[in-house]
Length: 330
Image (cartoon, rainbow, N blue to C red; front, top):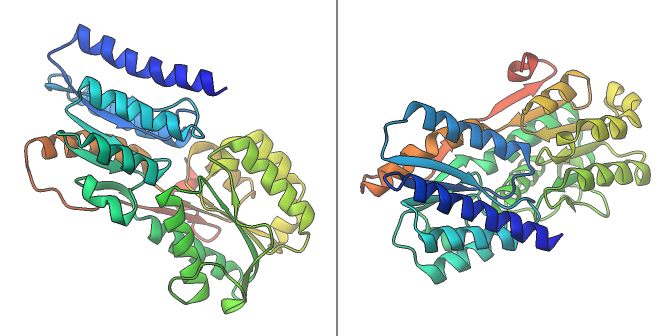
């Protein structure tokens, strides 16, 4: 499997090289995401392609790439390494393993602008990039906790489902959730603050894999029949709608009565359908299309030496039972 992932990463860079040979007049603005298997990132790609269609006469082109699997942290680092070695005008990175990616960028010391998109470097490494474009992830966690508190004002037992262990964006959301749920800053774990307690065995880490995410949910529900809340800090399980439906079917009576609540991140089409079907109580969503659409212009500004704000936050959409909002018709 690792061999296949490396082949996919190499193919992506070779495709870039071939494109460059065919159209050398175009300078490349690269967007490198955690994995091409995650439908969230496909929205970033669509934003990139929209920019391309509107800027056909530009001297720049937008290249979207990443490893085949979001679990291939080393593959993502290698793709970035290869792109910078071959030559790009600027690069926007969504680091899966923030410390590993930052370490490689520090070693390469690229002369072209580097920015982060969707996920940032750790605070100690942010000198390596010019700006971050994406969600205020701490605020996203805050809003998820607010939705949970509205449904469970006395708190309860909770399990947080996270992504990759070293993903800064996911960890920031978890911190925002814990701080808001507890009413205290810097909480590592909920142990009864404001009535909220994280159960044994949680948080669970999906490594951005939908099948693993659904299995973790099923196992958690079976082992903890009195669980009050399950929080998908990212939407992983919902990205596999059939499996997610099977898992939530097992607890549908509890979901309907709100004895068990599910709060999930993001509002992509399979997720909004799950929300409308009563398989989650709230969705707190990012705007990945906006990230992909804006990234090329930000990179051009950086190339031109213009002053760019840091960070550049895209907005959030909240869907719940009282106000389905974006999820109602999308």
